[in-house]
Image 1 (tube, one colour):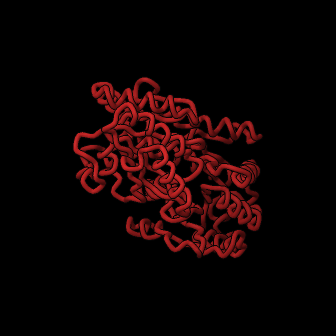
Image 2: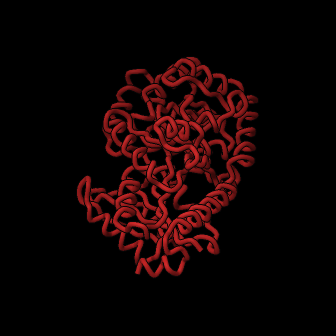
Image 3: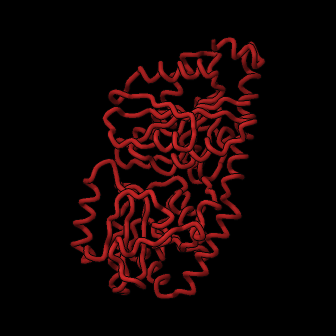
Length: 397
């Protein structure tokens, strides 16, 4: 059995990668993989909720406090976990967890565990985001195995010099039993003040610059001019409230402030999606968006920008529409088409549900990942001078 350490750094309640990490830890075959989940937590983050979520699911959750941007005590903490729990694989999920995993590996030398990283995408825009992206890609060249959540993400990695034969494309996936319209509870129209019968165009995700929600609102305003009864809902928040406040001001300037709901963070996402008629995304940076998977699983047609993995999820003209980034007019035209044509909306929503069931099953994804883990550990052990599991484990004591 493989002893796996899932390692991640994020804030508040996380995002799509955290849904994948926690559900994987919950669903791994216990005969094949034993999982510990460790999160590097900024001590100043007072809204961190992932630990409570993980423990409520019965997972082994380890919280590693971080004091400042580069706290090398984190390396010692991870190394102690690796030794005490005899970890075979450290699986990083972002540039910082990859950085610490790499340092732990260097400190343990030839007896280090195998290093695996998933490239969920580098979503932070600007110079800081580019610095983090380059650092992560530099580190990834030194890992044993890499997972890209989309073919577009793999292409970006290969272009940066990461060996293609070390990268496996494993799309994000979803539990289609849990994410179904039959399980959705009541809708939220009354709470949000949405008139019964008014078409609702919605978004779920972080309220951050890389999501280009300015274009989203401009598309909403253009669609709203053609369909005055339409309403618009954005669910989620960001690291701080600055971006959201700017978007609220833009909505008022565009004349749709009274028709737009900024709902903040919600846990009841089944009810959220059940309230929508169309899902729209305008992102500039994505890996393979979990929110699109969720929307499709709930039978919603999707209008999205042609960002990375979104193009691999949405079949243009079949399950929704894929339009150029920053093109508010094109997004608005696609949304309007779906709002006014209820038959098209129903056909595309049903097709999206079938596509998720056929191609993005979580059970199938997990089996692929477990197979990959076994190959990685076997290859790592074969390269060790004292090959054999018992000798390796004794060396960690």
